[in-house]
Length: 148
Image (cartoon, rainbow, N blue to C red; front, side, top):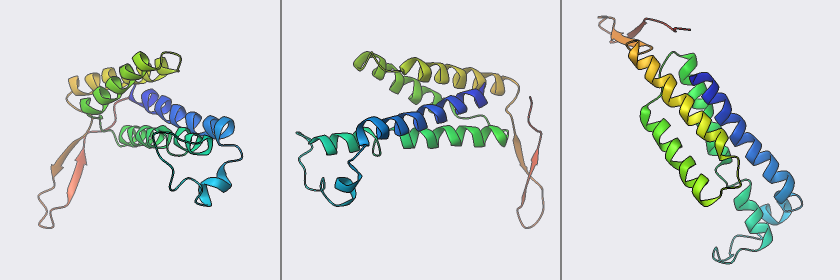
């Protein structure tokens, strides 16, 4: 469940960024990187500025990174925090209320999978137990393993 949540989050973030670049960002790169939107008022954005905030500077890139982090934690056998699942669920809920015609159900599914996967992992006593090896250098040894 955690793996599927991570995959959904990555796909959602990448798809948002790529599609926004394709639909809104087309033809604006020269303006963006040439300094054309540096001094614009944020209250009344021009089309190039609006396209920038919708694509490259949107939530898409950080969302893909969050999904990649979830996948990395899963590969290491570590259950993500409930805080991450809760924050993602809260963000998704506000998206559902404010922008109803968006693909928020995908993120709602990812949030649910993340909650349930974390709950199951924690009910089994955690996914990875890190204990001190007792070595003078303070090295850590990982005991336990991935439960699939």
